[in-house]
Image 1 (cartoon, rainbow, N blue to C red):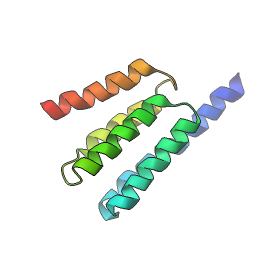
Image 2 (image 1 turned 120 degrees about the horizontal axis):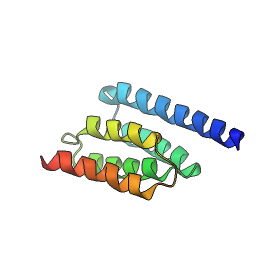
Image 3 (image 1 turned 60 degrees about the vertical axis):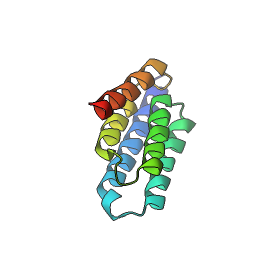
Length: 107
């Protein structure tokens, strides 16, 4: 059981590092490369059943594709950081994080 916990800590650390690197490079990247970076985060999260991260990465990618210049990337980055800390199969966390984005966009 401890090895599972340690393994998830490593996965969370890797996701956090990728997210930080993507955010730092975002202004210098093409939209295509940026979407690939989000896709890489989603793929890793999916491999470990981290559904809150997968759901938010999907939403982030859709937002970028629909409004590349108007996407509130900072908001998505913040919620993805929150999602990395959630329990892997927590559907309620996914819904709550998505709702927090909707509320902020509607305000």
